[in-house]
Amino acid sequence: MATLSDLTLNRLALSAPLPLDSGRDLPGVELAYETYGELAADKSNAILLFHALTMDQFVASENPLTGKPGWWQASVGPGKVIDTDRFFVICANVIGGCMGSTGPSSIGPEGKPWGMEFPVITIRDMVRAQVAMLDQLGIGRLHAVVGGSMGGMQALSFAANYPDRAGRVLAIATTARHSAQNIAFHEVGRQAIMADPEWQGGAYYEGGKGPEKGLSVARMAAHITYLSEAGLTEKFGRRLQDRDSKTFGFDADFQIESYLRYQGLSFTNRFDANSYLYITRAMDYFDLAEEHGGMLADAFRQSDARFCLISFDTDWLYTTSDMREVVHALNAVAAPVSFVELSAPFGHDSFLLDVPALDRVMKGFLE
Amino acid sequence: MTLRADLAKIAELVPAGVRVLDVGCGDGELMAELRDAKGVDARGMEIDAAEVEKAVARGLSVVQGDANRDLADYPDQAFDVAILSQTLQTAERPDWLLEQLLRVGKVAFVSFPNFAYWRMRLSLLWTGRMPNSRHLPANWYETANIHHTTIFDFLELAGERGIRVEGSWFFAAGREIGGANANWRAEHAVFQLSR
Image (cartoon, rainbow over all chains, first blue to last red; front, side, top):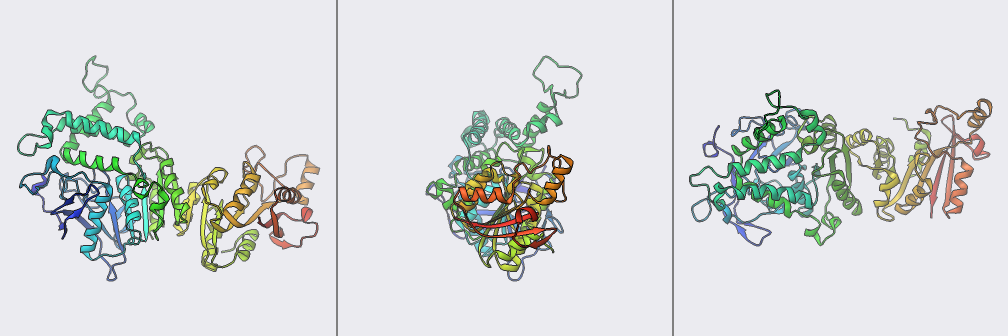
């Protein structure tokens, strides 16, 4: 597999230090981004896509690191649901990430990787960086912002903080606030990383292989939250992995164990453990109401966008009732909002998978 | 596009440019008509995801929800007009729903099938069974229409609750008819209500 340093990525250097919610300024910020389609002469057809926790800017083209198709390649492209024959789609790797944008693995001001010297960032910081990118690209008002999961948090944060910069806001399988349970699962992951001796306080970039075991366990725990119980039962049940009987040992007897181990291990090939710490922290800090004096409705009071929110009935990470809170807030300020709970068996991951009703709603809303 | 007679009447009565909430909006047929013909700022609520999908594809703003509960989440007097067409008889508590309609809307339009329509009466009289009709085709045990009402019953409820009836329109066989003996002659009724 290629490593990040082998890749030639499209990068944009922000012209000024990025002010952060923590009060610090982040100097020398670069954003790695991909675009699809053509920007119209009047620049009216741009859609900013926000990626989820472990995704990146390769939405609709082969990921050069993994060699796999883009994470939303089924939905974004010529003639597809987000039609790149009509729309100019932009997606940037978030700050704190590890696919070319400035993050803890980037070289910091001391001439060595930031590691844990990297400032703690927020969802709003990620959005602020991308708005600075839009400014430098000369794109004023977007046709739409779109995102699922952490991407949906960015879409809501964008709507709240840049209320006149997008005509449409499409947020899928997301929430306006990380719950205690959401934070709890993330904390398990972070503790697994930090308990791995290879983590070395985050300074593992010079030699050493990094906390692969810890990151792998973090991914395993998180992955469970992305799937539904019914989905797991249907896919794996209690079936055994390549054997006829239990071994009375701690090998991966069950298919679900083998699957999770594979998910964990393959994740370490493409994701930086410190990025995982920083991005999960940003998600845990996310509380859109808190940013607006405790009233979620106030977050949207200035917005002139149309909203569409979509949840999935089997998603227990960001539930329908989480999304209904956002709907109520939007109703309270008379914002034009559509909401639908779609039925799909795949849990939280439904937004990335083949759900025909999702395609129909997205297409109808964006056109 | 041809709207059902009661919807066409409501579409005719809603003033141009107002804010409307259509409760039980289905695929948004009436909302689209109000938006396109009258520049109305229309919002909808619909319980069926497949119908919401169609409405969103029409560029309408529709929230999937159950009017029996979710109407309570809308602010007071948020809309100039609240519409409840052919949905009253499906409500868990039609009286609660009416109160909510007049809380979120300054004016409400309510349409419902009149169970005292002469064909219903005749059907019950002759067959001794719950009537099936073109407009009420489901069997009694599976019908969504759990609170059938008549024009008299409706007017009595409105009176008890201090709801003002600002106008009424009646329909039979898809055409508007006069108000005389409407409780016999009307298959459907549309009422304009306020507080």
